[in-house]
Length: 344
Image (cartoon, rainbow, N blue to C red; front, side, top):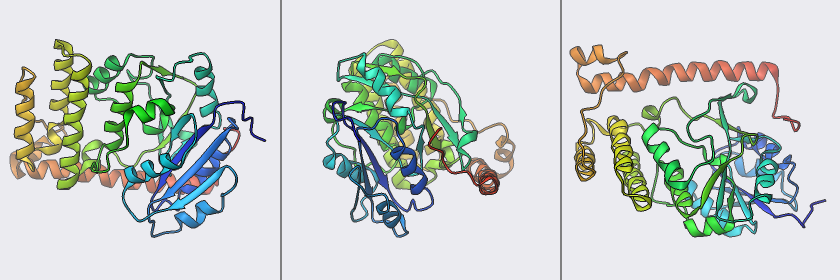
């Protein structure tokens, strides 16, 4: 029986070809100790059994809908339009929440009446064995003002995974919809807008999220797709604009320059047009960018095979290692036959 005297929390899940994971993810949120919740799954035109599996869980609490394939951001916008909750919990279909994640953050809400306070939480990376997730603190794992949060994110190359946030409906509406034109870093850009609309970011250390890391390294994840590269650069430009709108100072410009320099390797040398735009942005910020540097492990190839070949190897070899590690991890998980327990 739900205690409707407490705020309703909407847990919103975009799902696309997530048949391997959606069952475990749904069980982790149905088991949430915060009882007054609604769960909305939007299947984004999956070609596997995602929709059928999710529908097994339909109830007064769980609603499952499907749509023509439009992308994760469109699915999230659709899910929000169907929701009624005072607070929003975003969750990707392959990630997991500790069963008391929402309850821990709602306890923090109870002592902070402002709807403009944003709540974050720790996340641990895993592949298949969630019980071996590694929770590695970063400079964002603390209470911060919006400007300080963005400064640390961009200046120290750190981030928060999207499921860590608990967002009031007021903040969600103030931020506006997810940008459906962004094929990459759409979550980074979206939560920048949420942070811009917030008064403060409060970190709740016991509210754990289990993040099924999709790839090893940003360089591999972004890849060489023109559309992804263009979307990533657009998101970066918006990050800088958002931070400058909060504070135009020497420290903000310095953090923005670091952000540009750190990301330059994603675009070089394949997209020199974007590199030129980045150099122009750096000049506007009062600085300049140095040519990107390959990891020392691959710099030897630059002398014999050239920069492009060395960069391809720097992308390719970690992918091979990641695949073997993921396969081994999956084997061990199946041998142990442990699904996500309700007591975790």
